[in-house]
Image 1 (cartoon, rainbow, N blue to C red):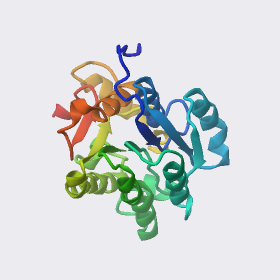
Image 2: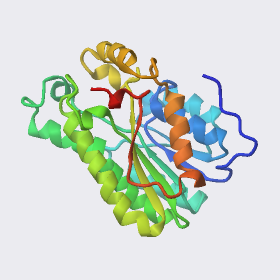
Image 3: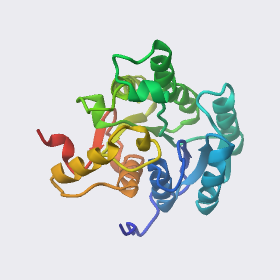
Length: 261
């Protein structure tokens, strides 16, 4: 897919925090590239030292002046990221949350067999971490801003083998609506993005994911799968003034798969 060429960088000077990049195939990486292409300055996080080896070169290529560790399960790391942003930038315009995790046994064992501990951890890391980010980001969005998080079709319809992540993503989409309501008076817009299936590291943990990919390609009215830049450009659009009156939505970027019976 070729880059979209614009005569002027509409996000020039905007400050964007991108979380959830694992490697060059991550949805968050596509979003970071799109934000950068439209002129934004980036803060990029990595989850641990192992992922730093993959994310570091990407952050360097994106000329991200802020590059810090952030594991949603580690106390204090999120606060440290926002302290750095406040110190160096004094504000934030765009927040991208692209984090999802559940214990492997609970993810692959079906909802009926999901442990209460596994359910709680999946909900905390994949859903409530977005609420925690929003709480810290809102005071820095002094002139309004855009918050984005990643959902999936399985939040609203049953997708075999998606298991516990279905209820977790449903909760995440509900959080988006309530945050949009609470933050609207501060001119902060909040969205859930629901991409079609993409071969990412996170998706590889789902049983029979190859089947999902093939089915999506066959059912899509556009006749093909989406890629990370399709998601990235949509997120970038939502962060521009062109989408200034849009908030609280779950936007599907799936070639039209979600409209099919």
